[in-house]
Length: 192
Image 1 (cartoon, helix red, strand yellow):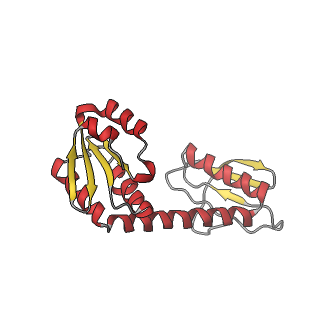
Image 2: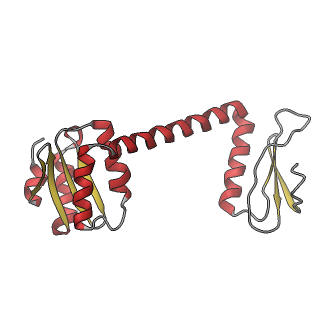
């Protein structure tokens, strides 16, 4: 156990071979396996009154280790980290494209999206990196964006978005010539 921390434990919850020890004070969280005589036994210490969500997360992890073994859980956590790193690198690659520069400039000139900006900065950038379209449709509104590459330009989806967004959105065809504004009706059925 960490010699610099002296928690007061109020309860221990045992899940299979894993033991969860929960303290009763203050504000930070520390979770780590402690060396024990049984290699499959892990003690998780939540220091300083961790909130219920963190307790639940620690209990879930302790249960998963008990059920599947630490190597399996660590491999899953490593795969999740690798997936997140790949997604971040694809977002960065998408943000470096001329297509992203065009939609970012439109977004800035309109001051949209005010809410759900991640539609532009993450989702659209990711799709541009993944699909690498030369031509695509894009709409922007106060509450987000829609990007349709040729692979995903299903007219019924666009029609539904035009019905829900109506006059509150702006619609564009983006190609190597830049951005061409479209009417909502033309955007809904434009062939890609």
